[in-house]
Image (cartoon, rainbow, N blue to C red; front, side):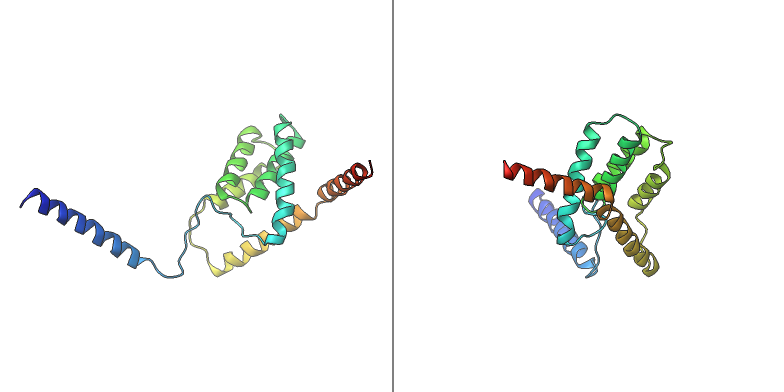
Length: 163
């Protein structure tokens, strides 16, 4: 068999294998990529979450250790659940490494286990995940410290406009 015929045969096998692999994928099946959000979010909730993320990023840069720093990392990890799964894992791992005996450590370990779980979900667990998503959103968006921060920023903006 000539080298050219062998090369054509190898290419044909590769193409057929690729086509067979594509036809074996079940319609409607999906794989969650590590770079995708863990929880889907409505567009109306995206802007407030981005504002919270910005505040937490600033707090994380300006803290070293302690309750305020721990709070900033944990809250940033929660917001990352709606942005990027890999980022959420990174933030929770940093928090666990930096403060392994902190007040959020048990929850952090729980989130890490949940984010890294690749087992298929049952209908029951999907219902729990929906409930968990709503609880996290409620806790993030309805916190008094963030609404107070928004009103302070609004007040500062109005003062600046008057000047």
